[in-house]
Image (cartoon, rainbow, N blue to C red; front, side):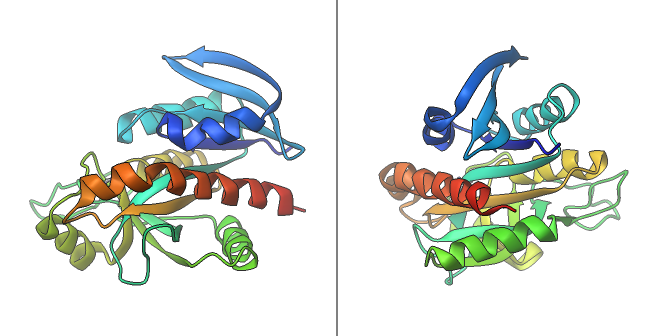
Length: 230
Ligand code: ADE
């Protein structure tokens, strides 16, 4: 039986989905509330992980080991790294990278030791389904690399560096941690991230202005995806 894990980092990224869950009960593990129930007729475990890679990783690992999820989707907001994605548009992961991972005395920047990978690939089936859902909803979207790190990216210098190093199209703070946990546990994963800011310039003003609407769009795509599943 399929159980879908949905992770958002912040309240604003899970509030709509939480309000729509049916037959829900909550279990708290390591300070994270896991809401177990159904959404759009499908079995779902929903959690607000907290911000950053460590919280995201412990949330994903708990979903897998304790709640038996068979796939995970990360839903939330991101800064854009490409002129093809503007505020309100959707980035879907084909792979995730950790832009702050650096053992570069000899290793390429971003290399995750042990598994020796830079790009953590998304599940192609889920990414394709999300692609089709966005197309059907007439939402401007791109599939591409999503870069994660324990930094709110707000300078042109860092933004340009991430783009030139990883060819990423969006930046946020959790997806690649969840991707790594899913990779080592062989659990299908993809991220939906709706653009809230330009990751440079007036980033804080844009973020504060658009985070709620961007999070709502991401939740809407996640709901449409659940609904459209065979
Ligand atoms: N999430 C939304 N915008 C972001 C940014 N500019 N940097 C990191 N995470 C983000």
